[in-house]
Image (tube, rainbow, N blue to C red; front, side, top):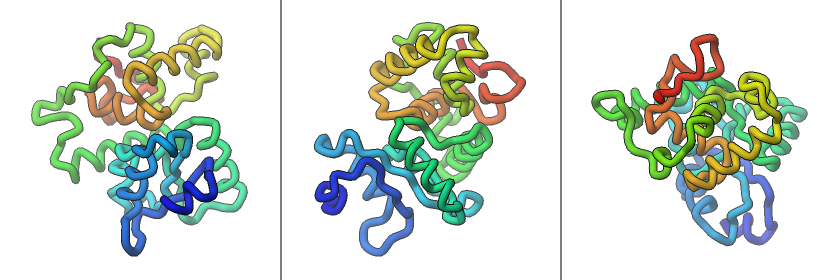
Length: 200
């Protein structure tokens, strides 16, 4: 926290397992501090082994990067995070949710799998819900624009309005909201051939 404030960082690369304060708690502290509202947190992880990534996303991280990433991948990740995009592929998003449901007692979807209420989701327009589902599938604005046959600028407007209504810091938190609410479910994400996965 002190280093983040002192250096006025734009992007923080955070390890989950650290001495003292763990990475999830540190991420939560950064992402809930109004003075650090513009700071993006990228989690460094071994994806196949680390079951805590989704908790970090819920804490406010904008995505994750494997610890074996090459220098050019690290640079690209920092740029993506700084631009406000989520570092989540469709497969990664689905894998994170599956892991969350398995290891967190199924609370993401509730006992009946219908999802838990997400404040503001009921005030989204049909188009905003559709865009949200496509974001959860890992699609970029350009890809969403192609899927919906609209301009990227129109998609950006929908994304910004959806973030405002849901109180989301970035696209990663939109992914979390989409899955936690049951709007999109693991295995039915918008990035595949099975449709948008929307529930209404």
